[in-house]
Image (cartoon, rainbow, N blue to C red; front, top):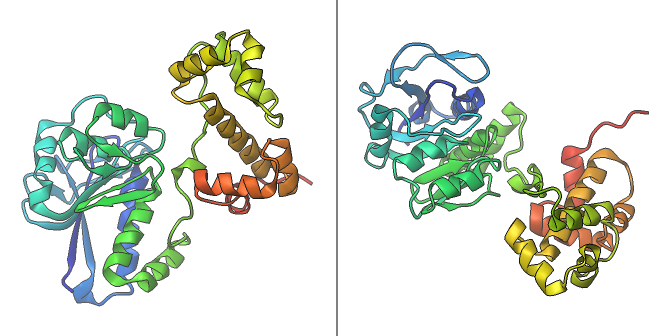
Length: 324
């Protein structure tokens, strides 16, 4: 197979790991590949002047946008810690708009998806970004089919990855698709990461968000559920807490939160269980009982459906050290 030309687009304030992560994957892959089958990665920017990454590191592009006229096999637009509020530089935007013609595969890492969105490349496509910015991405570009829980998504020639380290996951997936799972596993071992991460972004993101009005009846119900997460709750019992009818509560709760009371209760139980799994050695049965799941089996079913991992797997990944 021929050499793979990879370009990563950078600009002021870019997140360094969005750049270094996939580049390290391709560089490590080269150690297992023939020289004629290697990856050649370059950085592309508006100019050759040093760019300051969000962590303070200075990056210098190999090619300017004007110089990067040749075709690439893979082009990835790196992201920033916070989404851009306005359209990118017109020259960069025009260059990105031409990605479907200048590259075989094109996409983004983290909030680099916003650049693709401004270029009109996300319309009617399945995409992802950092879990914290997924809702805003969907609102900014309503034609995009945002998948907030996925670590990376490939929709035809478009590839997008979630936040920061997900660029490594994306790089490993691309290496695996081209050179096989064994090569991707070797690269993952060299980088001391897993070849294929278990679960999605939801295992990192909080399920609960604060209500807009903390003094509202809905907020009082939420506080009641979280303070008594192990109890049985019904629509009628929750309505009694704030002196509303069950029908009115159901309508107002969805209007205020976008989810049903039942959905909120399950999310509250998941977050309570996650905290216990992270911060204690309590048996799964005890965690499940205290958080209202009723049984460890039921908790496992909910965790697997919601987070993509079992409670045991979650604890193994996020367990905090407990002092003696």
